[in-house]
Length: 228
Image (cartoon, rainbow, N blue to C red; front, side, top):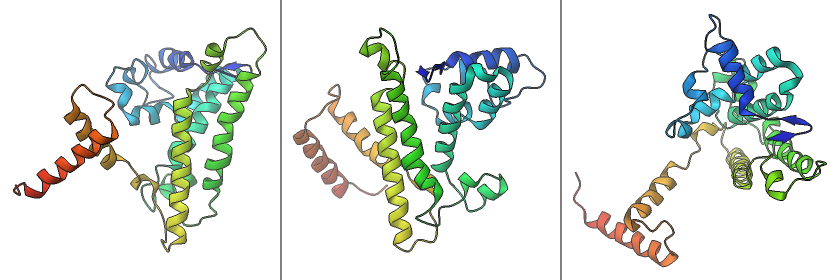
């Protein structure tokens, strides 16, 4: 990928691991392993791998060892690392214990992190898109899209940010003393749609009527099923 005249490349992380982590007695990124760099199909689904690769430790090590050559890769890692922290607040004291204010519980609708998520974080990707589209050169539209994150990823990030910020504001304005964003997840929704996909077999795009029929079937079976 590309932004503001610099590459954002996986090769920067590959070089960091092979030159300074894999065979070194003192690794600047102790959590970085071959499983993080040479990922398997199952490994690509592990969120902790992404969080450990896109971490402040990796960003600082890359910046210290390679300087201006990896500027935009470092910036991207730092932006995503703070995004992960803001959406992964899990306890009242983790931020204090780790000396990381981004892990503190949300207790005010005016929290600076909420403004950062809606403004600075999303603007980062808008500016990235503008930089790519305005890049001088004979590039096709497909090539320009390949220089940035996919539009599906950007849309997913926007949905996550707006929904999390709105939920935090709603809870705090409704009387909640604090909010832990780690508690937000869509596992129940994914499990529900998993049942639908299992019932339709090879049909990965069931119609509204098929889904409604499956919902009625599942409710009927659940109503008459004997308790284990």
